[in-house]
Structures are given as C-alpha cells and as structure tokens.
Image (cartoon, rainbow, N blue to C red; front, side, top):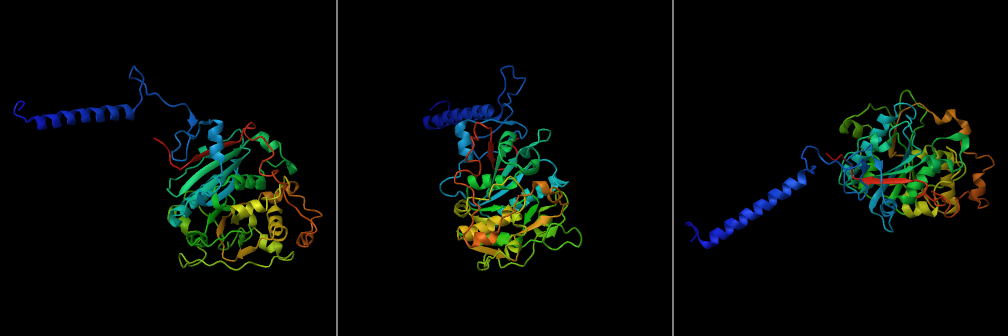
Length: 396
C-alpha cells in the first residue's frame, strides 16, 4: 500500500501521468514551430510543395522548386494507368476571348463534379503554355476543389520551349503540341483532349460510370458550331461566373439517362466526304485509350491552329487502321464566347496540297516522326519545363 493505494493502482497512475505528458509535449511541438524568442512563427519558404499528390498547396503564388528526382516523378506516366480517365486541356492566362477566367473555372468545377458523380479516379492535366509574364500563373488564378477521386496536375511549358518550335503567325499558344504533351505524360487508361470552354454532359457522366469505352477506338461527338451566339442550341450554353453545383451540372443535361448502362454506337465508315462532318469541333472532344493515342503519335505538329484535329481522325483511321465511333449524343457543351481564332487566318495550319483521299488510299501519310513529338526531341529539364501535382484545397 502507498498512501492508501495498492501497488497496482500506483503503477497505473504513474504510467497514465507519463503518457499524458508525452501527448501534451507532442501536441505543443506539432501545432506551431516558433523561434527561440517565442515572438514569431517560423514560416516555410515561398515554394510549392512538390513531393507528392497527397498534399494541398500552401502558397499558390510561390515559385516551383524541385529536384530532378521529384520532377521525373511528377512527369512519369507509368507503365500501367493510375486513373481511369485523364482530361487534357491547354491554356494560358491571357483572357482568351474575354471573360476567360469564369469559363475556365466552370470547366474545372465541371471536372470536379464528373469525378464526384462517377466516383472514378480521374486526373485533370492542364498544360499551361507560354505563360504571360505580366499575369498570374494558372495555379494562382483558380480554386481547385478537393475530391478523393480527382487529382490535379499542371505542366508548364515556358517561353523558350515555345520559341524552339515551329510557329505560324507568331501564335502565343500551340494547342495541339500542348495536347500532345498531355498525352505523353497522362496517367489515365483513357485520355480525352478537350478545351477550356467546355463542360461535361450527363451522357459523358453515364459513359464514364458505365465504363463504356474500349481500347483501339477513336471517340468523337456531335457539338454545335461555336459561331452560334443567338437562340443557342442545347450544346452551346451561357453560364454566369461561379454557378452553384446544381446549375452547372444541369446546364449540359442533353439526354435522359439509364444510369450505369450507357450504350455507344458502332464504328462509323470514315470517308473523305464525311471527314469534315465527323471532325467538326473535334478539338473540344477527342478521346482514346492511352496506347491508341501513342500508336497514332498524337496530333501532327505543324505550328498552327485549326484543321489538325480533323486530319488526325483520317490519319488514325486510314494510316493506323483505328476504328472511329461518332456519338450524336454529345459528351460536352461549349460555353458561348466570341470567336477569336477565325480572325487570325495567318495562324491556321497550312493544309494546301493535303488530299485526304490519298491518305485513305495509303499513298500519303501525315504522321509525327518517332520520338520527335510532344517535346521528346528537346531537353525539357534544362529548358525549364515545370510540373506540379496536388489533390486540391489550400493548406491553412
């Protein structure tokens, strides 16, 4: 007996006191790191966290800092896919077509809703191309909502890489070269190349939820032309900035759904006569398995805009014998804006002399050289290509 307590009770009391002391000391040391004076918090340097995709981003305005090992890890596509779907989009913060910010934020939020509704593992892979020096970077311009099903990855192609590539009409952004970069590094089983003004339809939600897509097929969709600005058809929408989730989700319903049982049409017979119809607006949606994209070596890198997405369809079908599925039920809706690229014809891809009937007859090929597309021929480490990966949300 010790002061009225048994030896067993005393031992338990002493052990409890020691345990509580350890817990208290650990909690104090883990809440704040302070200087010896106790007056100032020790703040981390203004650098973005780069070591894994498990962390939030503490300071979106910080300079990206990484080792070569971390950089390689961020870009590594993996031998096997990590996600079911990679969404690839190319952008730069130059207020494209006016009010770019709210349309692009709607696109990001629509991708978040796609992940939340389908509960499939998805990565949103943004290729930030030749960012303007006088504007905020992409990471510092938007909110990225956290979902256990969605990973964000931003690959930034700097000015010197942009200037090392062919460029028609001094264009500040190369859409198809950028999409090829996304295709090269994407980790999804399927990769969809789209544009910053699109949002996802219920058809696409259901097709993803149903896992309706197959390898060795190019998938296309119907979407109305972007030069419609009055009496908007269903696939062209006009959304405000920061709509709530219900408004955003319902803005591109398009069809009633038998959820989990989505059926895609059979492959279509592609001919030189229907190629332009099938490829119209293909820049907003072209999807294929990761191996199928690489089999066709991505979009032909011409240094121009327009046409290349249509040409890719004929090349995939006739040069590489890849079937094409065209869905009249659209997978995206386009957010209405003024047309910009039509006013700069000097930047359009030179397709004079290209006869797709010759491609169909296997007389001509328009294909990127092996290992000379998606920046494979450049020293992108020493030229300053950046990569950051995170799950969304801000650290506080």
